Image 1 (cartoon, rainbow, N blue to C red):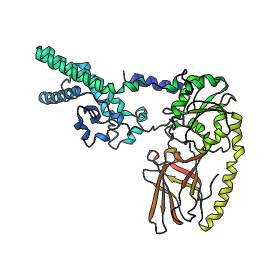
Image 2: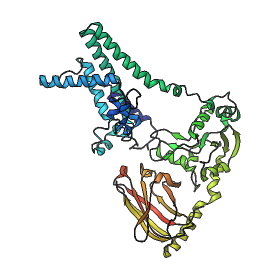
Image 3: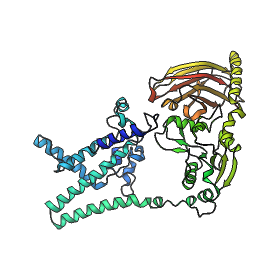
Image 4: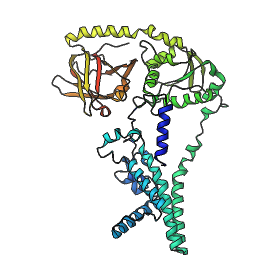
Length: 497
């Protein structure tokens, strides 16, 4: 009841109250952040047991798998397990593990949950079972389920010590030994938590309104929050849809969140989990080539401008610099600049730059030069994705080594869950098919623009040889059997400026 009733209530609440219908069905991280027995039972990377750090598997234990229960609890657990197995074999029947029915249930459940935190049974080639397991398949960071075992086994262990050394051996030697176990437990707790003191204090001058030049100070005294409707951080970051990862750069996440905190304005930078896929792409489109329209503007409640929080760094790409160019600077902190970007300006950008017209003209040139092997063109290609790379295009080209190659194609039905996580392999070889370069990347890392359900992908490569064979391959382990549709595939040296 304690396990399934909250789960059922949560699912019912999501069904009736969650307005987002396009969250990912396969969040990343189930296997990446699973637990490990060594992280539970061994004092890895502890100064008082340095020899454990030299074990071959120590460096392979992921950081989320560290749910160390303590040396006392580990020792007692294995002693009790040995006694339980021996007694069960001797009596030819399963015996009580703790001599307490309630604790037996709790220990058994916590141990099963511990096995689940190791990824069992799914790590034994049963990933299909995980995918159809409903809410269980939605989990990630499953190593955290080991925390239940930490609490349960320590209660059981010290109860065992109390009974053994106070009730059964009620003498001063037993009490001294029991007190020693408590000291060991306290020492390990201190050695673990003491190093986090400064982190927990977490003094951040940028959050202090009274500090002149801080982000909080400038945002409070120089920004009239009611004049804006949303904060847009630059460099832009968006992690949450599970289909695309735009990592924060130049402290843009921390500092834009501070600005949101003091102004009360929402922030379209995202650091969350299982967010709406379509909403993520609408927001990301603002930082890509201005194509036809920005669909997200239709979702905004009014015509108030966007507040850009811009880091002073060299990580701003050309698209982000374009937004700044069309904005008005209104304030500056020690490390950040604030700009006002009008909604009407955003609406006008596609017409100012006319990228669809430029793109169409380039394609006409590509089709003409494809005749003499200076470029490659393919109208439409459908391929079935699998765990192995599938060949989508192959061509032999004569190229100018002074200019890069541009591989472009549209991905149809781009908002389909997991499509953006499709991996790309580009193989460049000489005319004898000897490979001289292999380039690995992902679809989401190379989005040039988004047009409704389609995304234009552009990959730039250096030219090392004048005559070469180029292969374009795709794979997606999470979308086995899915028919990926790409269109207007081109390989050329025409730049979309």
